[in-house]
Amino acid sequence: MKEIFRLDSRWVQRFAMLTNLVCLNVLWLICCVPVFTIGAATAALYHTVFLYHNKEDDAVLKPFFRAFKDNFRQSTILLLPLLMVLALLVFDVLYLTSIGTGMAVLFVLIVLIVFTLGIMVHLFPLIARFQMNVKALLRTAFSLVVLHLPATLLVIALTFLPVFLLFFQPSFFLRVGVAWVGVWFSAIAYFFGKFLLKIWNKHAPTEAENNELHC
Image (tube, rainbow, N blue to C red; front, side):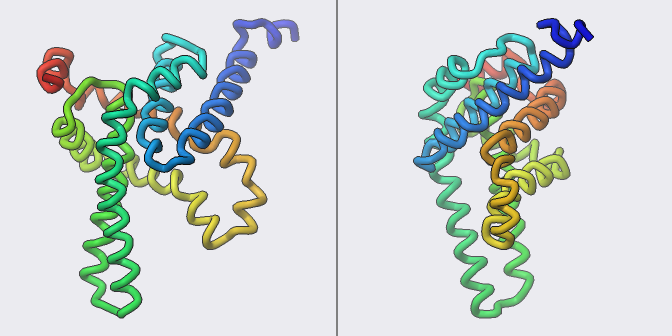
């Protein structure tokens, strides 16, 4: 029984990680409120969970806000055009649906929406981990979407599940609201971040290529 309460015990470490994820989730939600800061907040979120996975740091506030500041410019420059493209595609889908256009056009638009979201899913973790220029980031993100489409679709679905429930099942959304505020998004980042660290060993640029891409 005493082993459970030791600082180096598995249970204490798991509780500490859960506490960190709750703090990260709340930080991320707060920092996403202005909308244009979503990119920087997401990059900071992944930067922090990467530190946890690599056992480099177990803090929350300092690494999060340091990464938020360091990645703010590049994340915002990439986020705003992607949000504009996404908004345009969604508007087209809603408009064409209202006038009853053919399914082929709608299918193409939905595929473009999914790929845009997929690029965003991979883009900000890449920013958090690597020093790359805009062209290299977009190319790498697109490649990862194609190479790991099932995992990308899963992350998209889990990330936007609260939005779906808010519009279509608001009562259920409110009943489980503590999950969204408490740990939902940071938990997604934690497990997807672990997956990314594994696949990047195969697909990410080497250090030499990384420096070249940043120039």
